[in-house]
Image (cartoon, rainbow, N blue to C red):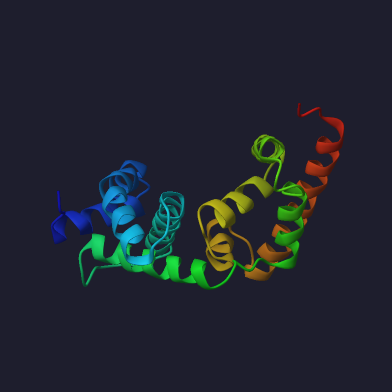
Length: 191
């Protein structure tokens, strides 16, 4: 069922207000059509289209919570599909670039990409460690990596002096998490 402009604006406002059910509604409503369109238009497989859709929804969410999307000039579906088109084109052209500090963490988590079982265990380990890392690291890393906040937005939300202080703290937190992963990974039996 297609949304009307008013319904789309209402969904955007609800997401801004922290209503996750609105984002879930968008996800469920547009995923099948997006995947079909993406697979047909770009000759990609089901997994690639699912990944692209998820990335597009994350981008939509970031645009809403960061105030980049205040009102629509098209339907929400059209806006989401446009994001998805850009995501697919980027994925087909080049791999994603990471900051050097982030690259180190990713490499430590995915040292053996062939061993999917170990990779999943490492991801679960990181999730567990995120629960134990403590504040302010937990908040900073979650806001930056999972909610897509900018450094400036994190500084404002967590009442830091400026974004440079947040960058420094984020690097410390990432380094700490990385050493916790290495320590636990060496000490735990993942089999």
